[in-house]
Image 1: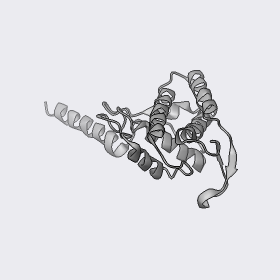
Image 2: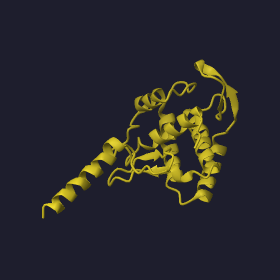
Image 3: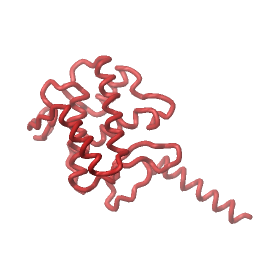
Image 4: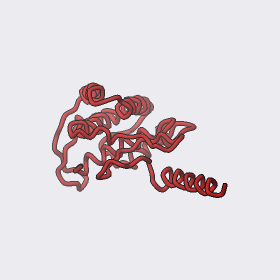
Length: 187
């Protein structure tokens, strides 16, 4: 599957946002605990033009995170389409070409002056919509490791990725299976 740079960045931001919540990377809490954490998220994803962040932004982005989670956990394309249509419509999606900050021409889907939540909803919603239109919704996954639950987008050629990170979750399960086999062989 060919995904352009902007779509990949938007998908990465959606996944990271999902994994900031309880049950994602932070099973005991919320990695978006305050406005400073939200600012770190914005920096990590080089999100431009969002202005000064406040408590309202934090509340709105947390609510958006829940909406993205419903899309990831949906039962099928029809339900996902309904959720995505509502999301991008409410974000005031306004496609426009831009070449800011040294990047070549690319499309922003959020309106000028949009809040951070509207920005994320428009760009992230469109990126997810592109996957749905391409018939690739099954690439939206949750980690198969027991107790993990982190979100990821499986961009492998054969759609075979099962873990959020092969070096941690995948390795942990492979080592546990190996040890179980060794114990069984020793009986």
